[in-house]
Image (cartoon, rainbow, N blue to C red; front, top):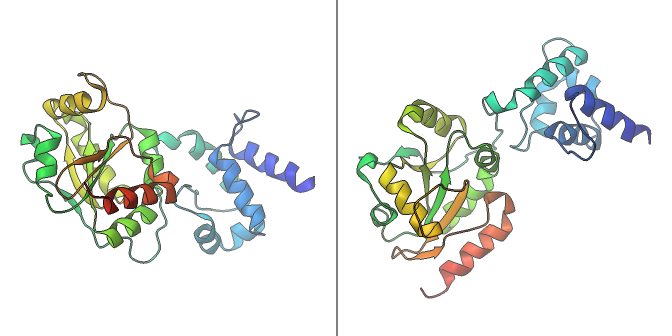
Length: 246
């Protein structure tokens, strides 16, 4: 009972706006602290070791600057500004053999067919996203497992951003900050219309994030794959598609 109350108090200090039934990342951090046998005092004494043992690619932990109380106050402010924070992901060893590559002359690519043709001979996983899409960014925290799977199966990963021209700087910054190893392009309006017709049968808006899979020959195998956060479910589905004769 005491531990439960402590968990709630810790989470409420981190995020005073917490409501009953919600499960913010601060609560996850609280549970990880207590489940790991760590205390706030431990955290203040050895912040680097504890931070490394707690971060699972999905939490931004504000480094301590003075005391646990100072950290809690700073974290509360940081949490409420989470949408504007730069990501802090902890990856182990080598993430992937891939590089962050912007596709040459990408602005001239007007359709998905044109894009996929560039990777003929390799299966392609497409990740549709945008710099303003928070759910997209949450999924990026599962990329280490995804990269490992794709490296083993020799699947090309292509990120399609639907950001406008004015967001080009943010697009390039985010692909680096979030360690988005793979091929990149920012879809022009013709490309976005092509995507919309393919996915929904008419021109219009796009739902993000969105994932598609193509075979070595460029055949569309699935236009609504599960997200990377489903992990094994996604990996198994991709393996089943690629092992079948298409």
